[in-house]
Amino acid sequence: MSNLDSIAFHQGEYKPLKDCTINIMTHALQYGTMVFGGIRGYYNKEKNNVFIFRPYDHFMRLHNSAKIMQMKPPYSIEEMVEILKELVRRNQYKSNIYFRPFIYKSALRLSPSLHDVQDSFSVYTLLLDDYLDTSRGLKVAVSSWRRIDDNIIPTRAKVSGGYANSALAKSEALQNGFDEAIFLDSRGFVSEGSAENIFIVRNDVLITPPNSAALLEGITRRSILEIAKNENIPIEIRDIARSELYVADEVFFTGTGAQVAWIAEVDRRVIGKGTIGPITKLLKDKFNQIVYGNDPKYFDWLEPVY
Ligand code: PMP
Image (tube, rainbow, N blue to C red; front, side, top):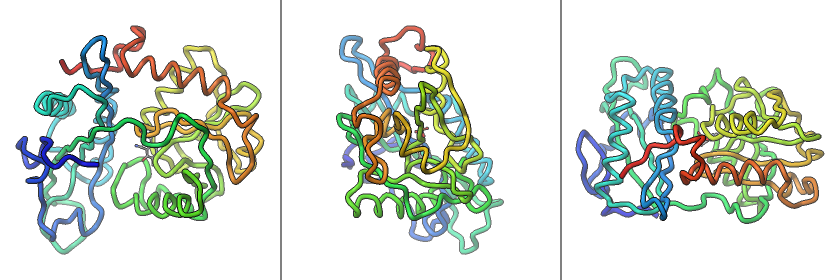
């Protein structure tokens, strides 16, 4: 998937991805002490421009993840946004792209302690359209793996070490013939997918678990809640029980990779009529219009590159 000749940002320089290497003793490699983001840029052909979706919010979350992990971000939020734009320009991208920015503990040391350890910032890019197939309904399963608890590895920090949990759940789901996993939290309530937040619709009310349900505070989740509010869709942020998924009228995932991905089956129970539901469709279409820069009401979510 990666293009090794693309230009990435590493150790303060723009250089080919193939030259962006680290030492095998690196703290982040040994202990999973890297915090990361996933950001999309959407290419609008008519406007001949790439729009980066909510980069300031993404980098605010990255800075918060860094704070939790006792890291000192080497660049301000504004400087990081500028690095993304420069990467698009240097790679001359005129396509949909995905940015993977991260701050990692770059010191070569044996102890896993976090404080007084040097941090570095890097970004690579990929050409990316769909991450999950959004043209059809997904078949998903509740994972046998529980979501890590905030007091084990904080899920609001997007920290690489925590993704061992996502990796176990994702592979279990795929190897059992499903498209994606749904995690329950340590209390047994619905938390999120392996790399997506989750919403259900019951009786025309949009429902999503609260930030306290061991989930990542998704930028897409927040965007969907804001859009729903503006569309006068009633919203409830509350715990969701596993069996509520089965009887929901609609279920969908949100995420930078997944965007808005509707779910046709959970644990082999067909959701609603087994087709995309009206509220999911409305939100998905609206979201799509917004990210490509076709809805002036939401222009402030977009950072144009060219
Ligand atoms: N939860 C997890 C565990 C994730 O990895 C992601 C992807 N970043 C999300 C939710 C969705 O977050 P966002 O909408 O900010 O991409």
